[in-house]
Length: 254
Image 1: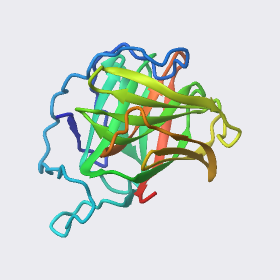
Image 2: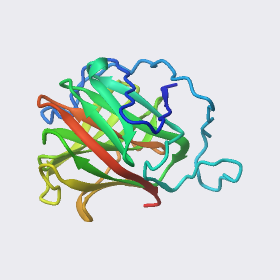
Image 3: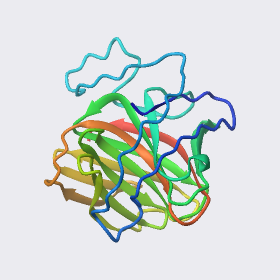
């Protein structure tokens, strides 16, 4: 189990985790780079542990739970049912906290990748969107995940503040990432701007959106991942510091 995310609404609270692997999310030169499986970080003590159901949300009765399958996290209050891990990088140079109604992530180490997943539900077809502001360098990625499974892998859409994007499939059995597509889009606002990024996983179609514009769509047959959690990530490359502020994260039907 990954570390449980429990944020308290006080300024400048910093929680740090770390581990190492050999994959550079921003490296578009190779599609078969091997990586090491993430180790299990220590669990952060919480007052209440929420057990996430493992079944698909289709036909599921959630009346006994406060978690919602389709919802928007605005960070006006502390989020629950989230876990996190560092895929690669310096554990002492990764931090995140809720501040002024935003979820702020700061990375001051190179080649560092911080992931978050919403574990209360699993999904087959799903759309995840985030509104995020860049407050640091342009050379970084904000990623959206779907069909995340520790046993099988996940799909990952990366949006860079320099206008580039790519989509990966992570194969958990081989511990490797496979680039499915990459490119650039004028729909991505560059610099210290606010962007709305979206990622739809609908049957075998993977679709990327930026600020209401469809960026690309591909049909994925090789891995055919069926269901899993959704999430997001922030990655640094060779320029620092990386500072982004998430205004909201929305999970909805595609």
